[in-house]
Length: 281
Image 1 (cartoon, helix red, strand yellow):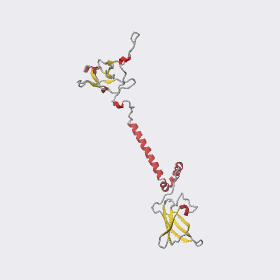
Image 2 (cartoon, rainbow, N blue to C red):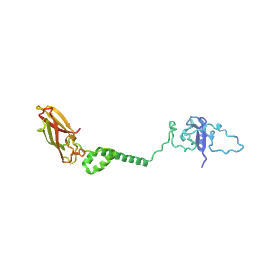
Image 3 (cartoon, rainbow, N blue to C red):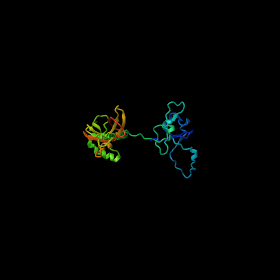
Image 4 (cartoon, rainbow, N blue to C red):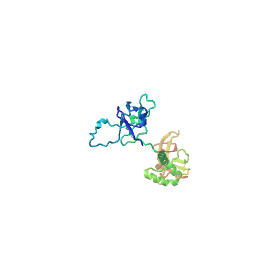
């Protein structure tokens, strides 16, 4: 194996690795790609091998060798001298402890950390894992958002959902009949209480035609005069009309009915009619 040779640019003291046949082609005339100095590569040849000093050798004057340099350019950094045509390129010597470069490093990025490209297999595994995690997060968010509907349509899942809600601090509530027509007022009546002057008795029946439980609605009672003008209007919460035995958290049972009976104090008003509506706040 031929011994490696090195040459030093006299302009910037950058060391390049060269081959004997490269210097023999153009009589050693090359140009430094760093400082553009044209020099004789044969005359500026240097040796990087450690020398064995003897007792009779004078002390080594390291300042005479020039300042040490770190080469950051690849083998293409040593350009042909002007007029040399297709002059071969020399390869710069690697710094101590550094592997010879195979990719040219831009001067402004000379101190940037080297980032090793990840293998295609690792990228595929990373992307697949990220997709699975993202799908699971979306699924969990959908279950959390539609937990009431899931519990209503699949009662067998209610226990598991309730366990999860107990852990994260949420609740499962009956569905609301948002204009679906499953919940209706079957009958209603407003009569004066014969035993108490000025007291009215409101009675009604709420009917749930769905096959799942529905949330108790609010009732709006409006008293009107003879010209159907509003005299007084009052909103009744579920706790105001459902009674103490009703389980408001479970809602109105599937295909179930709720009897409404409310006493209204109308001693300060005069009314001739009424209107009764349902709504959810």
